[in-house]
Length: 241
Image (cartoon, rainbow, N blue to C red; front, side, top):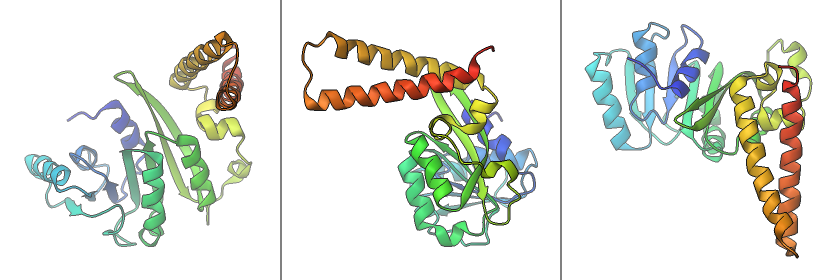
């Protein structure tokens, strides 16, 4: 079986030999793929909805993997024990929902060695949330699929880690766009930045056409100008490439 590009990026970050917990598993594609390719020994596919979980069971059964992948109906990590997994995956949901799941599942969370996230909104805030809650981001990827952009990141507990240079505080641009994506001058990030720059320039051009601006419009204009400045600062990383 083949995964989508975004789930392939998630799968690539899973440490071989780890037990997986996939929260919000949908069809269960990720655990099935990882078990079939012998990257993980076992998994829990969890979802809050009986419908998605039923589809996951069908998919798991199709490949005869019931002995290796357990399905579990639960809200986030509320039905997961603290020693049941090594790798936690949260993919295909918004950043605020991920933060809620991590906040409410702190008891289970302390047993995981790594957390792999594929947020679909509020990404800068999620990066800050991880650092503020005892994690450090150690790996990032960025994929484009069907015209949409998907950031993927791996975080590990900061306690007990030999972090070395990773302890250097992240800049504002790094929280916005990803330290490792910028460091590696990731080509998909460059495409994303170029698109975001065009969007901001169009918005500012519309503001320039107005003779007078309301207080709210002035506030929004300043916000967009700051966003444009952040994007241009990030794009400078790509100069000469």
